[in-house]
Length: 494
Image 1 (spheres, rainbow, N blue to C red):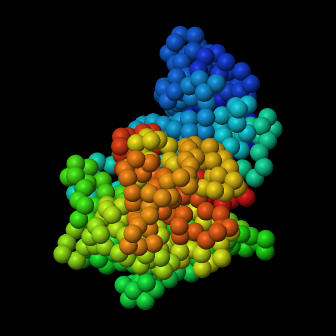
Image 2: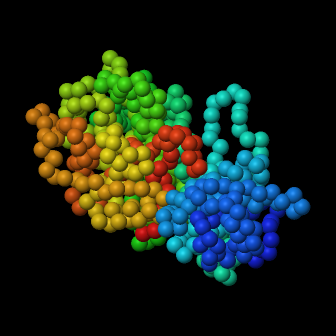
Image 3: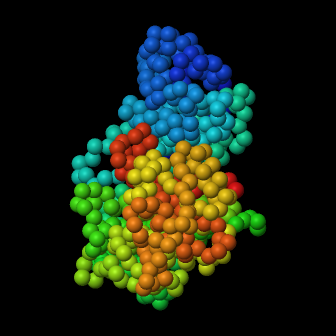
């Protein structure tokens, strides 16, 4: 898609379509200079009750004498308006345009006191790109729309709501949206098309294209490095494990080093502690953390992020077989610490353990890991909020603020030392898991054991948010790409 910007005053409908966003009630027309050309039409529609501005309500109107569409999209109550609503509204507009087989349109950036004009522009661009996504499938007879939305021009009366470098805002928002779409597509690929080797090869291709340094550890290197967590999880599968390291150099002298670690279980059967059959087909998305990290790394050069960023992808397939690891096994991780296996379906933390230990070789200022880690976090926070664990006030405030700015919800959960005793083992340095109660906290405490003192670290548990279990304006059912825009916003804003 092509995104453009226009700041010229427009005195009437524009061919072939104009999109306007409205909040509920007559107040939606107050202080809205971008509606000047359409005020009488909109006032009449509101007076008649033909359009009320309810959240994601749409009204397409065609003017045959002008060969023009006017498309109204509701934002809902102004008092409840949040960034996610602008994203979903932009996505809804893109879907209406696609359904009408329109290839281009003018989109009026909503000028709302609650948002800066640059933020409103950024969010509507992200939403529009997500809404225009055509999800890949393997159908032999495609049901894709015959006409694809090609060009959106975002219009803002610049002298009424000044913007600094609007084209840069649009470009960066498009890059962020494309990265989220990339993470979605990776998560949607079936496990027979995306095993650890295939995902590693894809990472190499992306790294070469974006001029990132890339290193892949095969089984021999993993054994040589004593990456026992990754090897244990992958040893039951015919598909060998891999570890991918991507390095983006950054630019500024004062830049920080940030290491991102993403859980990459390309399919999780639960191993010998087999999962129930119901819902197991969705376990291809258990590599969503790795998909997020890979998509973020791919976007960094285009965004010119000043910081040095390392992306680590520990990859394995967790399968039951005569070679699979077992409950009761003792493994030695890359850090040298030994772990007693309690449950082979608590495999993600073993991959992250080796990834986090490796991360500290790069002397990072910050480490962030992201993973579909625990069902307990899903139960606690649902499907629209991820868990955030950290002892760092900087990471906590920065990630929460970044998430709020791009419409992604996180809730801080505690790293309570009183639960540490539950991880004690009589045979190893500690156990891999403990009781089911407090499962998300237990998993985070386990990961913290692989972080050196005085290293700022945050753990994002996206078990509930990594997958959409129903259609929404900003995407169909499947991988959500949750976490991409938050991490990119964080990296670009400190």
